Length: 223
Image (cartoon, rainbow, N blue to C red):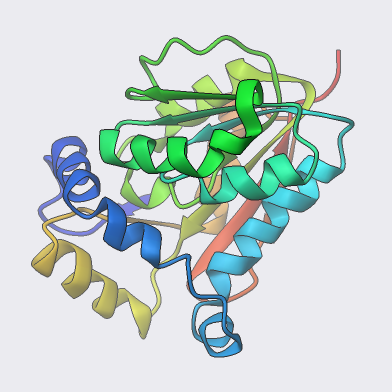
């Protein structure tokens, strides 16, 4: 189900270090929206669009963003109609960037610097986002179970998951594992379906818009 790159046993601290040291650099990846960038990195825009479309399918939803980073997705979903936005990230520099970006939304926003599994988050949320999050998680099933607990009946979880590809796989290994000392993980369709079902979600849509990953929308059925 989850296929780790090698030498990923110290994943949490290595990931934290990367996103504390490289917060601004990572945030800058989302700044450029020129057509060429959209062509070369379509996954960034596809997952954002699925998140926004899902938020817009609800009436003034409460949104939880797991691994919210610098608040890039948060900005779009708040503009898309979210009535409440809670972002959680364990990188303090990322949260500081998010605070600056989302300040204009005032009391609608709450940002928490913490590990998601331990964060003081009160449900229930109509939409739970985990976009660009599971790339770095070695024990993903623990996180999907908590997402289910915090998802309101009738609510949805939207997530993105990388998959191994012969072209991008080796490049990502060199870029993240060897040069960046940051573990990354890959997923397959069958394993994702099993993981979300085991977490309690009754319906899971799995989209494969390209060869290098999956997008998921999992629904917790209404009571």
